[in-house]
Length: 308
Image 1 (cartoon, rainbow, N blue to C red):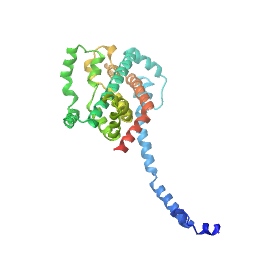
Image 2 (tube, rainbow, N blue to C red):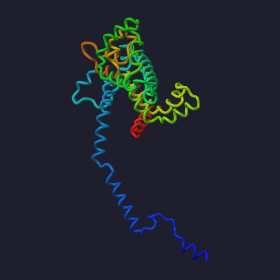
Image 3 (cartoon, rainbow, N blue to C red):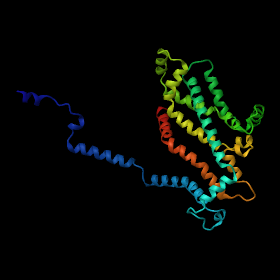
């Protein structure tokens, strides 16, 4: 009796289980062929290898030249393997200019500017994205419009302001103009509009949290992926800044890395091995930043792309 009831009861198997084995095998074969067609071909891999080669070769050849003397650049064919003069060239860099002080100055300037830009840009982005106040759209357009003004137009009035503040030939003159930028405000505004639910802010207000507490405990954790991306880009920009530090700094002990490199390139005959040794040393902190934060930067970019 029980056996008959069990045999008459319909099973809950899916459509794929009711198909004959031949149909299932054909479906898997089509899926496999479709996957093989979508795989990148040899041309894609060759293109990636070529891009990698042309991207990494300048850095590698900088190491080659930095490890040789200046006469090696005139050799035919040019050298392609590192030499034995790297330590000597590094010592010459630090004796020609105060390069250790320049590295410290650039680290101080870049870290200060990066921390300030990330904090204030996130704060302003939160205000423009989630807080309602009069003329918010007009103010955001005004902030974005400043990105279209060339930096060179503000050099003279900015330099006059530094004279009035008595900040010329100090690191404050390099730090102060970069504490906030329009790109960071716009970037964080666009990110927080999609990444931060309004219900989360309303729930925090119901719990009695103030606006700054909401920003500190709710907005900053939500904005962490975009903050990492903005921080890396800002650090890179501040580290490579040359135009404004060249104008406002005059003492060698206050030079940043880029100004110190320009000093190495001075003279009647440029010692390319010396310049490229300094360039290699100036690149190492950037490589360290990308090595430490590269995966977080890629994650933030991908997360923003998905949310967009």
